[in-house]
Image 1 (cartoon, helix red, strand yellow):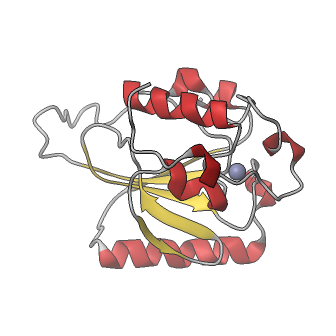
Image 2 (image 1 turned 135 degrees about the horizontal axis):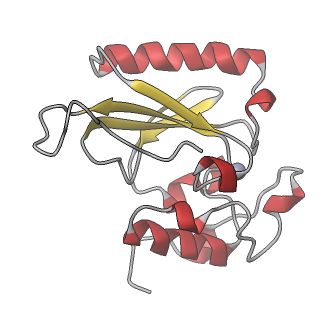
Length: 175
Ligand SMILES: [Zn+2]
């Protein structure tokens, strides 16, 4: 495999959380390879499956994620999507931070309160006057997600992109 600038495997710690699915090695059920959109993305995902970890659990996050973390709150890690959708000006990724969860109902009340503050901060710091939120959860076969650990996307389209068609905009799989 080509060098993707990943840190050596030995720094990857296995999950301490009680979700046994994360403890399995060679476990591909945390990722859905066929929903990957780009070749490099698939290569990183293969490495993650090989390492047998969840790439979005905080202790592993910066091992695999190539974009800088913008900020963290108690409940969310906020960064840019490493593989942004085409024709976007901004594509942020919000990853649930306290532990490995896969369902939206597992986000506790303060987590949603914290989320609203994250959104306000992004809107202010990046002068976002428009955008779209997307959150998939549960069975990745039915949502199009690539990583099972609960996360959200905040996408701002780029209407100035020459490929942008205002009639169709940006398309992605949501189900
Ligand atoms: Zn996780």
